Length: 331
Image (cartoon, rainbow, N blue to C red; front, top):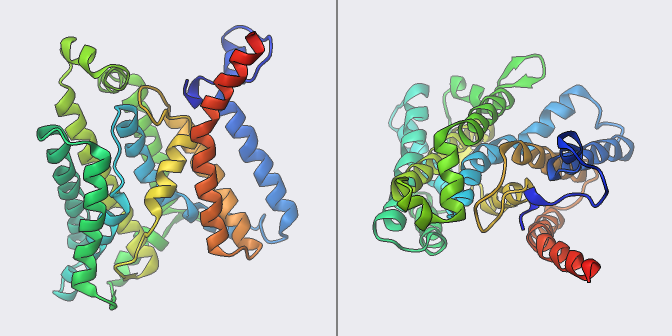
């Protein structure tokens, strides 16, 4: 039983009632509750510019989470996404040292992300290795290459125009990253829920053998999903490097945990087969509000890491606990 299938126990019936009892609705209520608590916890929270800054806590991670959601629904996972960001950022830093302009830097970041995704895809879809094992290996490989190139150093001095992707605003307090996040959410929502490609992803996650005998090219679709995850890591690398204005080999350390937590909290079954993009969008906002609120209260970063870890364990264990409780109530 997935989080997406869980309902609040009551006697409501009908399609509208099912919507009211869905996991996404409950998650939205949690988001509203956290927003209200944050507004009381800190007098600076409701400032428009502070709220705009809060979006930077989740937009870059959510861009990867959209592609990760599709990958996990298909029954696979990629734990190397944060290391892909580090390698793509390092490649952009090298290119910047050689005189590359803004457009070339963006292209290099996206291309490195795509190549890393293809590297993972070959081992999983062609050689048939478990994705969790492959991506744990490439997680160390990609970041290790960054450390070999940079050591304890850093790349600085990116072109002023490059800063727009991570620091620019489209209108008033609406940042470029927030607009990109919204467009990607819409795109991935349509792809997953309104196209044959999305239906094939669900079919593969539920039963890859049956999907294959139904004429679905399982390995090809999984290859594409790894490419998308790598590409989104490249997009996040461009935005994050632009926002920080520098590259270090430790960039985005631990982000893979937050991305996976975001996906699972959004209702995607960690075992594959079910999930939704709206749930991931709401989960991204919840995590962004929580981390920003804790930051305003000067809560140490290690406490936030503990919270993320507990949250991941909780949302994975919750379906099992719910099923046990339901069985006990029936008996």
